[in-house]
Image (cartoon, rainbow, N blue to C red; front, side, top):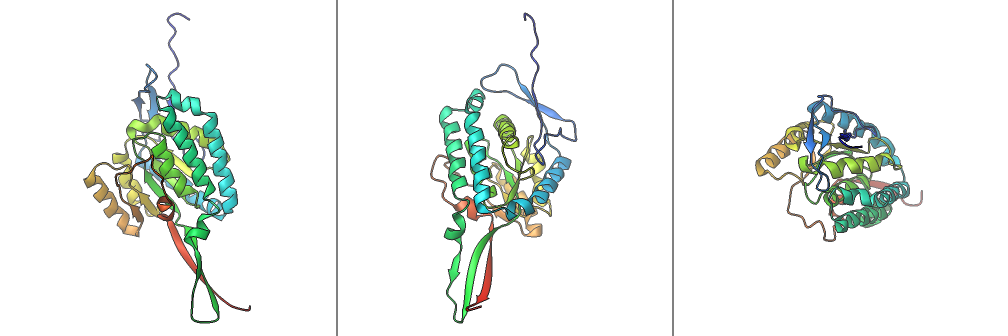
Length: 278
């Protein structure tokens, strides 16, 4: 229709499996590389961080208590949904090679769900008639500051290794990488992933990250996407109040073999003694 004004899409936050607006009512404009019209994206606040942590904590018991095989099935379903939306991600201006790599990486992490315990755990030799077994367990709620680039592959590479082992996450998407993040949230919402396992907040990480780092119900922190060294130092200092595990920001080649380091970074080791012959 000549002269028609298109409806501008408004992207919301992803908390507890739902899409609420920011409690502050704030938003900002994000321009897609393949669109002449900007989109409205929610600008998260301190209250949104608290709500996301609450949702993540509520989801820990069920997600960590699921069998590793079941978590792997659910994550593989997410990869299927990502494959189905491949063209949509490319439509955001992401390179096709990056989208394909992100899908493949999600599948790769899904395959580790029922294998990591065999690699990272094991039986320990002891002097006595006992079995001594070490098994990895999730640390709990992980706060993540996602990298700005690559938009989708970087996001998948920090979320998937944290949740495949049973953790739940609160992710602060990069201010300029909001569209891949909220589109990924739409994928997660239509998959089998339980609500609260992944919570995605858009906006300004420099504004919301301090509240996430200082939150006493967050167990670990991934600072991969923090580019400002002073902010990284401040966040690490805030995380020390309740002895959070902290993964410091380092230069990362996201196209390289990721290894298992990001999975083991957010695991605790439980050791069990059991007498032989009983």
